[in-house]
Length: 495
Image 1 (cartoon, one colour):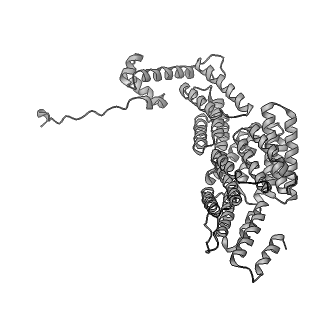
Image 2: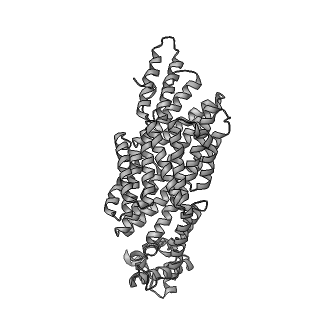
Image 3: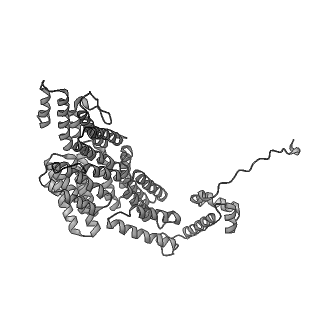
């Protein structure tokens, strides 16, 4: 008999009130959720759990009891919805958690409001809405006292994760240092979170500062996180840190070791039937395969991950996966599809508020296609401007280095194609110059094809044909033709 079973046996006590029975179920579920045993937690809730996204039954109990049930069902909807790739689950979880927070606030229970806001921030973070997550976490910290040490530590840890995803590595590290005293005496699962997050930050700082010893420290932290999660029997987070460790090994060029850790993570999430995180493992493996120049294998794997992310509405993760697919297709010679999918990655990330992912996708588009005539100069400069704006708050040196390289690509393109360029072709250079001159003529003549043709010394029909065949991307810059009106006066000769 497990500890959860023992605690649930308390329900056999006939003297318990209905509210007391509900709270026992909620406390047992909370412990199981903390251990990552989400399916067992849903079973512990009994008839209170109706399924992912389903509002729990309200039984006219005290408001605080109803809010506790709403809190647990909201958390489970988030985690199980992600694990089972249920469309709309995160929005449904947000609704339940927001309702729970409103009830707790009305009952004058600030600590419970903060706990609920902490869980709510996780939904925002998964959806790529990092600014909203940051605001919610800041609000959650305000009412906490020195007695709320564990909750305060969890909130600070979540804040560091949000800052890290925004490439604010130093801010994330400072937050983590502030929370350090809390985790020194924490349970195994929380210690695992501490070490895992520290590993993430050290990995980013290693790239930012170019200090190899940070990579060694990050490996140590990931290994410690895996150990503590194994002690806590927390398989999911053990698998997540195996994936994180594999990503670091991939960055270090240790591809065989990366595959070994990914194999372990894959076994865990396959066993747990967690398709959401399994897709993240596949995304990491696709990155490794790209580095190994095994593009066909990478294409197959990333396609499956994209399908999962699309169904689960995880926009930030989807944008990253689309960017990888864009790279793969570019390396396989599918240039136009690659350009289109990278544009889609930028759009998906921006629409969800994931500025960093949008900026990275824009840089990838320039890196893969910036020196190709398939990407018009005007588009190239606009894309670089967008990337620069999206990443202006990044503290990641790698981002700044990529921006510099992309700026050099833009400058080189603006100076015109040169014979020694890697992607030089005579007709490509002619086509690029032709497009540039046509675009300038249309802009100077307010979109009039007739006047633009005169300025270029062409016949109107010739310019219209060029726009329809060779320069379709400039077609939208013309002034739409105005249909000629038919005369209302009849021609007597035709009667």
